[in-house]
Length: 247
Image (cartoon, rainbow, N blue to C red; front, side, top):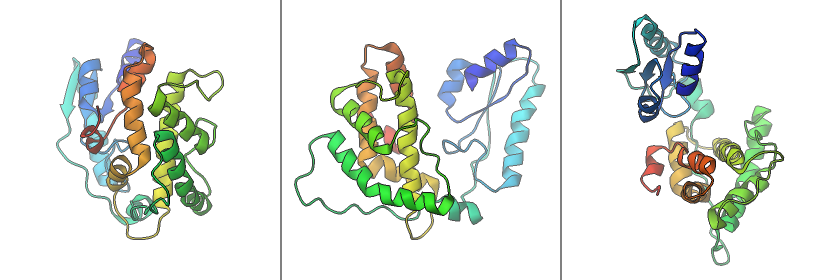
């Protein structure tokens, strides 16, 4: 969005940006930016809190009054905790309990991820039955193929793109998003007590093979001789808990 702001401004359209990663906004220097300390994917803060969201939006639009830029301003409030129907619908419900393997743990990321996806798939089917839809499937391939690509990438380096007429770098962007959506939806289909989306993210990055695989993909991708692939891998936005173990 920060880069797009420059493009729109060059066409005469004034812009203001809500930034979730301050370092990116500081480097790209869009004309007007409001940095917020909210979770990734929630630039307006907690859902179903119209008053808070209105304050954030007003602060962002208020930057349009600044005569000169670039302006990078910090929003002074943290997001309120989830509550109400949004928490019931979206929050983490309970950690998925993976049964201990009967045989030795598979040696490769690809094998471990395939086994984990097989355990998660019934819960994802439950999510789809309950909601009638899914955010998974942007790449247009099944989750097993997503796992095969990312597992092979983590083990041996970039394989061929599994998506027709799509580069490995672009495929990586799509498939990482699809895998995370699959896990988030499957997790939220579990019975139990509600929680926050941060708990789902922490669980994904600290307790699943999928999270470990993506960290390995990031490391291998950043060392690629393909500069675009290296940028895509290095630009994977990781939450704090993942950064603690990321290379």
